Every structure is written in structure tokens, then in C-alpha cells.
Length: 492
Image 1: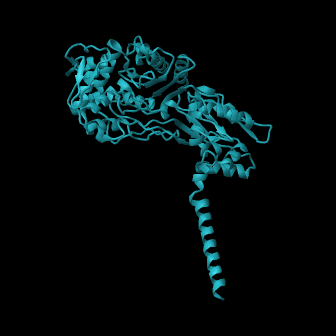
Image 2: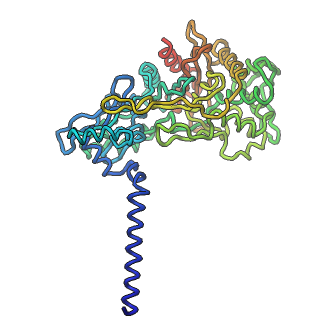
Image 3: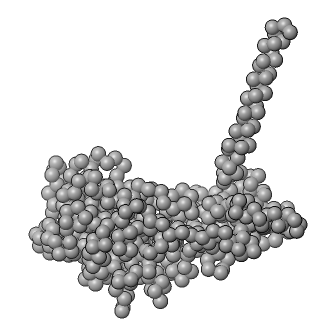
């Protein structure tokens, strides 16, 4: 064989080997990655050709598939509509899957390995293959209270409400407004689906966003619960400890100071930690932030879930953070502002519900989860939610949790969280109003749990934008009544 032919042969061999390696890589190592892509049309077409499983709340299907008389065999429909859309997401031929439709796609489509026996039986009996069902942890009554409360705030509102079972981490409610009608995106009229999607994607209020887990904003004074926890754990404070309560806190290393929202003192130069939480005293918690070091603050926030990804049942979770750079908290002024939930502190509503839930659960924070049970089409249980702790050690001691609960109850009975009071029920709560900029209104926050002596629900409400006058925006005023309704729904 002459040299040119030999060179050409070697080159062809190299190309052939490269082709085989690439095919092996794509079809074996990357197969799941391609199958899991939301925009994989082949996967979507396959989903349209078989009966996809239901998504349920209790025994009621909030997402199901119905026979279709067009090109495709099945039409995905969403009886849960706008109320559940941020959770369920949608299945669209053009835009793929989101929400539970995406995270549980293998189960719903029937491709999950745990459904192998069912697929085999379908094959042997020549039955139409169908997907498994996904039952959510949602309590319909609490979800209704959350959604109704948010929509009652008005049309041009950006807000969210979340509820957890403190003992298990089960998500009892997760509502976000504005929402959208997923049926308009799942339609087989692709022109209409595109028109609806373009309208939603171009809406400044971002209705496709699940604000409960995909929006992280300064939590304002609700973060004072984390600061109080750190002070009780690291500085040996208790509900009766004296803290600074003056009108203005002089910030070291700075020519600025930190005032209280009211402009006056919080009841004297020295007040109890309980009083500081009742009136949401900026100067008291700012001083505690200065007294704590950056590692103590960061470790306490981390134990409650900050800086972590903990919700696997929904994609695209935003991370709650104490700061984008821990070294910045070397400066006392930045620690002071961080201690009151401002500066670089950002949290999702789910994260602030977890703070309350951890306190309610004696200091142990449970990992939140949304999928309660997975069943085959014949209703055989193939998987079930398993309560697990988010950290190897509690966020705070039982003693600290009891002290925080005592102070939060007093904040409802004697302080800013009064709008969440329920007659005959001991409620623990904390308000927050986070300043953002002069150009936009503050964010209103509220977090609570009940009954305080044996909690069955922990709640967080966040109002990012509303038509409320700037001077009337307050966490208790906007979020308190919604939280109250959600807690009443859970304990009634």
C-alpha cells in the first residue's frame, strides 16, 4: 500500500473511531441529559402519544390527560388552573415542561425505572401504556386560603405565600401571583400557545415566575429572628436580656447611623430582647449584629437553610443568602444592616417559612418537600415522601427555640404582628418591611406559626409589589391577614 492510500486509510479509521466514540457518548452517557431537557421535542411528542399520569392534591386531580381527537392522542389539561400553575408548571409541545411536570416527568410519562413492571404488563397484555401519578403534599384548604388572600390584594400585585408542616417539612401551600392559565400553553393549537406564551413572557409582572422559590429579596425584619437566634446561641441572650433600644445607633467605621423606622426610641435606652422583637427595633438588632462576628451570623443563617439548595421537587430554586461575600461583613456597619434583613441579605418566601418552622419544631429545620406519594396507574405506591433534617445538628437548641417562640407570641399579642391573632389560639409571628429603593415601594413580609404550644403549620407571606400607598406598606397590614387565614384553615 502506497503512502497516500495508507495515510487516507488511517485518517478514515480515526474519523470512524471518533464517530463511534461520539455516538457512544451521546447515546449512553448523555442520554438522560437530552431526555431531561425541557425543549426536547422528541420527548414531548412521546408524551403526547400516551396517557400521562395525574398530579393530585388529596384525591382530586389538578392535572390530568384527556383523549384528543386531533393529531395527538392525548390533551394535557389543568383543572387546578391558576391556583396551582406555579407548582404544576405546564407541558407544552413548543416550550417543554416546567414545575412538577418537569421534575416528575419520568414518573408521569411512565419511563421511570420503578414502573418497569407496569410497562412489562402493558406490553404482555397489549394495553395502552400510561404514566404514574404524583400526589402532592398540599392541603387544599390552606392553598385556597393562600391563593384567595393574595388575589384579594388586587390585580397588579406580585406576591407569594408558603406554608409548611414544621414537624415533617411537608409543603402545605405554595401560591404565587400573578399566575397564569397552563391550559393555554398546553393546547394543541400551537399558534394560540405561542401567542399566550409571548404575552406571558413579555409581562413585566412575570406571571410565569413562582415567587415562593424563584424570587429572593431582602426579608427585612423577619430576618431579626435569625439574628435573635444567633444572639441567644452565641451571646447568651434570653427573652429578658437587656439590649440597646435608643432612637439611633451610631455605626462604627462610618459617618452614618442606623435609625428606627419610627424615628424614636423603642421604649428606652435599654429594653428587653422581647420588647425589641415586639416593636421590631432596628437599633437593638443592629447592635446585636455588631456584637456578633461574621462567622457567627453566617453559621446561624446556614443552619436555617441559607446558602443551600434544598427543594428537589421543583426546578430553578433561587438561593437565599446572607451575603454575596462574607468578608464584607468584617465591617460593623454591614453586619448591623444585615442583622435587620437589609444590605445583601436575600431570602425566598420558602426560606423564611423554614425559619419559623425550625423554631416551631424545637430548633430542628426539616427539608421541605412537595411530592407526598408516587403511584403506578393501578395505584400501587412506588415511592413516598420521607421527612429528613436539613442539617446534621439543630439550627438552635430547644431552649433557644422556646425563647424565640415566647417572644414571637408576645409580638402577636403585644406588638406589630397583631393582625395574625386568632381568638383562642396562641400564635407566634414576626413582621418585616424591607426597604428597596426610592424608586420602588418596600417589600412587605410576614412569618408565623400556630398553635404555638404544638405547631402544625408555619407560614411566610411576601408582597413584592401592590397598589398600596408607600406609607401604608407594612408586613403586618398586608401579610398578617393572609397568614391568619392560612393558619385558621390548617387548624380548623
